[in-house]
Each structure stands twice: as structure tokens, then as C-alpha cells.
Length: 140
Length: 126
Image 1 (cartoon, rainbow over the protein chains, first blue to last red):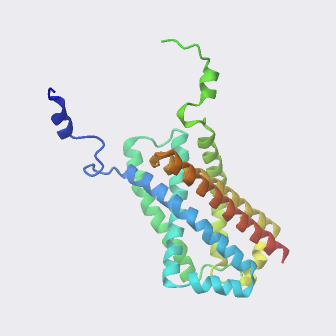
Image 2: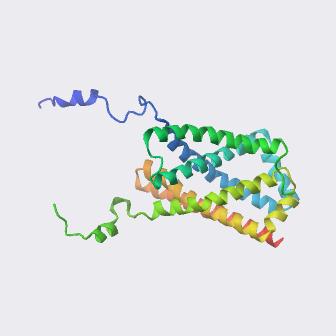
Image 3: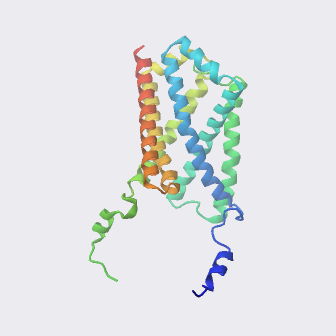
């Protein structure tokens, strides 16, 4: 059987896309982050269901929720969910703008990717900062 | 090469995805609805942070707040249902695993939504 002269060459040539040697464009990062934050909030909806059920159970339910979520680990997870909401909200609005044809220029999209990362972290910090500085709980 | 298919027939055929633009469009419609609903949700959660269960019960028992929370839950879960399907469509290649995961997503979303709505109604009826 004759050797296929193309086989060794085909095995050695660089294949695309090579995820491991790619310089990750920031827009790729924002796209992946959008999926991760969406999935995170889907889990967060179970926490919301948990919270609503606990409230409907009265004082004992309220305390049982706080016993788990008003802890360092619980608050860290709630901070994560807050960031997921802020990020997914901001990037979601950008997706809607893209759907309408705005901001799709490469440089522009790269720049506002960085802005969205920064704003989402600041937004999540602002939400928790408002609670810790006593600016929350205004529905009392 | 010319085709005997009419444009409408091609659209109705819907290719290998077995659906048209419905998924894309519903994702966008729910996203738009979630812009004001998410802002309201953040306002409500911040306002209730550090308060008591009495405050939360009174707030959620108010008809407008019960309706808004119900709408937030429904649109969020509808949007989540559509969104969670996308990675499955993208990365799961075997039909069996795909159908299994799609069912898991569907049942989870329905269970979560039913639980939320039941709790909201229960709070309003307390």
C-alpha cells in the first residue's frame, strides 16, 4: 500500500482553532462570562425560591434562611450572584445594542468589554457597600 | 443551481436546528422585559436587606410587589430556560445526552417557578 504523502504533513500542521495557543480576545472573555453569569443566576433562582418559601414559613423560616446565607460563605455566594446579575444586565444591554447594530466595531467592542468588567465589579461592590454602610433596608 | 422550493418552504423546513428564529426572538423579548424587572428586584432586595421577616412579608403581600415578583420570576426563568439550552446545543453532541439535559433544564425551571409562585401566593394570602 502506497504511503499517503499528505498524512504526516496533515498531522504536523497547526490546526485551527487552537484554543490553548490563542491570545484570548477580550470579547471572547465577555461572551464566556455572559454564559457563566447566566448559569450562575439560574442557580440563583433556586436561592430566590428558597428565600420566598422561607419567608412564607414565617419567623422560623426567616431564621433558617439567615442561618445559612448570613454567614461568610453564604455572603460570598450572594456577592457572586449580585455580580452575576450586574454583569449579565450590563452585557445583556450591550447584546441588545449589538442586535440593533450599535457598537459592533472591533475597537469599540473591545473597549466597552473592559468598561463592562469594571462597571460590573463596581456595581456589585456598590450594592454590598450600600448594605454595609447602612443605606439599605429602606423598606422598613 | 436553482431550487424548486419557495422561500417560505425553505423557512418552514428550518434546517438541522428544527426551529426558526423563535428561540432568538423570545430570548430578546424576555431580556427587554427583564431590564425594568431586574432594576425593581435590586431595589426590593436592597430595601429588604437587614430588615425583619415582617417587613419582607408586608412588602411582598402588597399586590403590586407580588405581581412584580411573579413577573420577575416568570421572565427570569423563561429567559434562563432559553439561555441554558444554548450551551447544550453548542457542546453536547450525542442525541441522548442532549435530550436528557434539555429535560433536566425544563423540569428544573418548571419546579423552581412553581415553588416561587406558590410561595408568593402563600405570602399574599397570609
